[in-house]
Length: 80
Image 1 (tube, helix red, strand yellow):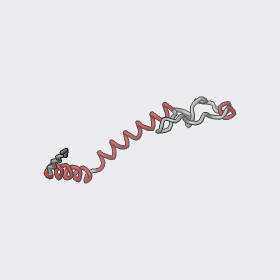
Image 2 (image 1 turned 90 degrees about the vertical axis):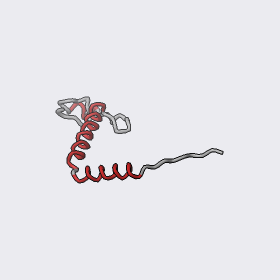
Image 3 (image 1 turned 135 degrees about the vertical axis):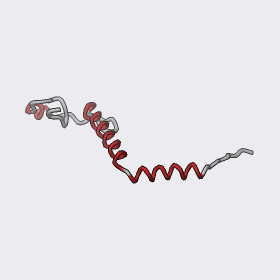
Image 4 (image 1 turned 180 degrees about the horizontal axis):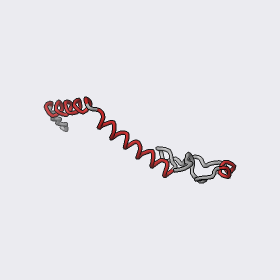
């Protein structure tokens, strides 16, 4: 006969929930960290010129590339 044994420590779970509640009372550090991570993700997307799924961005039309003075080979980038 096979089976599974599951051990649950309610005190540990409650302690972790209490810690999470305490962190939510001061959201600034968490939000700052999330914002910094989002900036990293988006900077990477612009460097790679791909969607979050890794699909390359559609290339600029030849007509627009001729008119574009800076970064003519980059999509959604003018000066950076």
